[in-house]
Image 1 (spheres, rainbow, N blue to C red):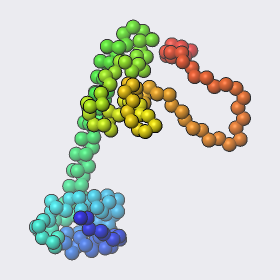
Image 2 (image 1 turned 120 degrees about the horizontal axis):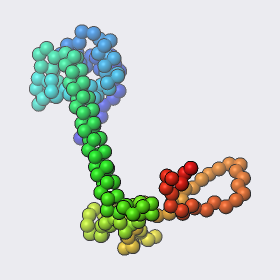
Image 3 (image 1 turned 180 degrees about the vertical axis):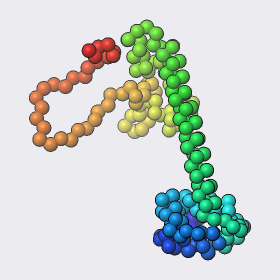
Length: 189
């Protein structure tokens, strides 16, 4: 069970770390690190690496541990996170590009009308109600008023959407109709 902690100001945070035998030469710099890096992320996230004995209740750091040791670990963690995010972003871009390429290769080879096949649900493999977790599968099917699945294959992407608009002092005289014509970049002169 998580131990409930009360608020500790910068002075208290500094005192806690000094009692744990952390070497801090510049108090103001240490407090600035606690404030700007988030004390919990900066200290608690890495203290297990620097403690003498993890199993004891009284936390004391190994000999000669300084606030700079925490700062180096924090910076390394940020660099790893940044590098990992960069690599994941590259994977996401490559995955999206490959999906678009192979989808278009199969379904979008016959001109403008064919390019709109991404709107055609028959171009997709729709899972049946037993092929995965219900929370994902049911997204592809309509539900009736009781929440029971209707086996008609649809997807929320292909449903008509209504957007409620609340306005004040609006006077509109006219008719709004959907434009169902296929749109192609060459049509926008």
